[in-house]
Length: 180
Image 1 (tube, rainbow, N blue to C red):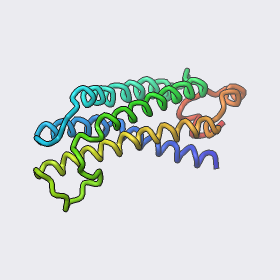
Image 2 (tube, one colour):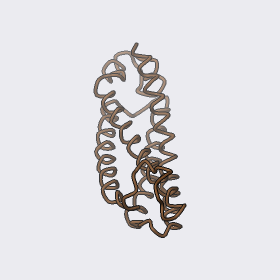
Image 3 (cartoon, rainbow, N blue to C red):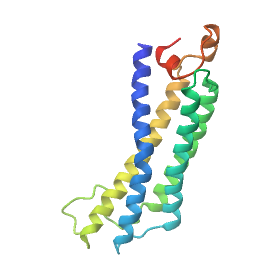
Image 4 (tube, rainbow, N blue to C red):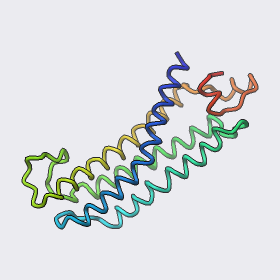
């Protein structure tokens, strides 16, 4: 059963990695579309900062952690993973809340479900609405997956460091999936 849960967690990591790619793409698309729509207000500072954060931070995390996790002699311990996850969860919740707060009115009172029968003042305004909604969905799914990862690690889904040391194994992707 523990191995099955770890495989599910691995699938969620795959989804999270896909979101790492999609987040900056949708943000960039949103910036481009909002520049074309005269009725959309683009908070340039917030949008550009979020774009840079959504592009640079996740890739830095993926590159630094994957290099450690895939190494035969991994130096990433479960305690270090928990510390990093706690930091990431706090940071991404803060980013998500601030970004949502400062961009919630960027296309006025158009509903977030972007209904096709809404009287849009310009045809591209609906596309801007769809990009905004997609951006929010990706950002909050990304944040929610981080919370799920943290909860699963704290609940002991991953093998414990002490058990791995007793069996002479390192904390890496192979040993995590196989179990101790």
